[in-house]
Length: 112
Length: 117
Image 1 (cartoon, rainbow over the protein chains, first blue to last red):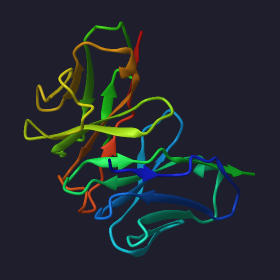
Image 2 (image 1 turned 90 degrees about the vertical axis):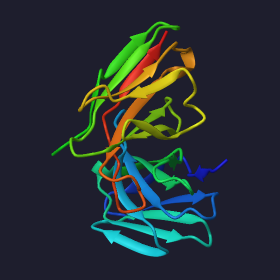
Image 3 (image 1 turned 180 degrees about the vertical axis):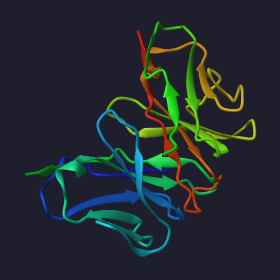
Image 4 (image 1 turned 90 degrees about the horizontal axis):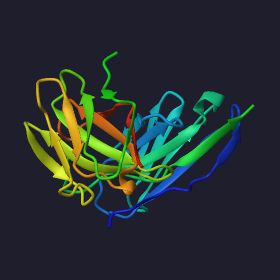
């Protein structure tokens, strides 16, 4: 059973701070990783994908991947109240082209 | 901006009844998916579909589920005999290319909340 684990939170950070969200996965040969944002009652929305070890930056978001440790993280710089949502980590299952396994998500609260 | 459209937004059905959830994928997309999310739980893959065939399916997608592309625009999920545990948010998604390894984004619809009573 391939698993994706996240701390459910809530993670509370003050406005303007850096939010750090973490995810571990069990399938050692997974190659593709995704961070989705989900507002309450809404659909998942892709923030970033990452495929190689290291960092990938997009605006205020940085995804970090460490395949040796089976660990992927998302940093949100200059956190805004509008970033308050649940952040879902998803892993593309090995041997499939399209089957994503999601974690339970980490709820982020950005406080004023 | 193109989007995946799902109808209805909320469906209430009695246990044992058949339901059909409808989706209109983004027009130039060729790959379609259904996911579900039971309240407070993970988003779970159900099935992917391409060229009028199921490409992949999960163990959740048993004989009570079926998918169809009845015309050039709609993609449907049918649940033949609903159970209480089928109550969930069902998300349709579509992508332009098959492999999500190639910087291809799967765009999700806003979901249909299915309540089985």
